[in-house]
Length: 262
Image (cartoon, rainbow, N blue to C red):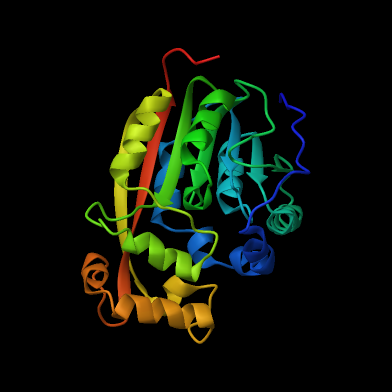
């Protein structure tokens, strides 16, 4: 595997304390460990011998571990060392020796061009400071004809006041922006990807489950409830009823095609 010598000592983010604090909670999260979106993502990725895969923003490693069941070599990249340590602990416990973990940013990956055959990113892009640059980095490290598998929450298309993202930021200060389905289609196409699969999943979850790892009685939890209950358009967009909401996730795969910029 080809590596670059990018310095990771400059890693810094306002969100790092949140992930450091909640690394164990993410390691125990059933929704990150499984879910229909994960199964569909893995099923849509190519089979083959010698495939090298990268999972960007791997967190505590759940998507990376599923990739390691499919491929012989997997790299998990994340910006938070505490999250990666949880992933390493699990891989040691399960004796998985075909997955390694690397500290690094999604917008400046420490890998050379054309290193991977498959790149994935699941439930993380809404944290990224520059989503277009992230997609460009995926294109750079992915070989021509390689596959990019993407999963993330998406904003409602009719949310003209960006209320959904404002609510998410009240819960999680690391949340920057969840794009719409249209945003991701345009961004991938502009970067030189050809989309070959796209599907949205809607899941009704309780308000308390949506808040996790934030507690309902925390200040952040109270602010979220107050904001949602006073925002009638947002309640309608999220189908808020019986103290639960509808959360929408996008699963998309695309192929790196065309001439890469140098």
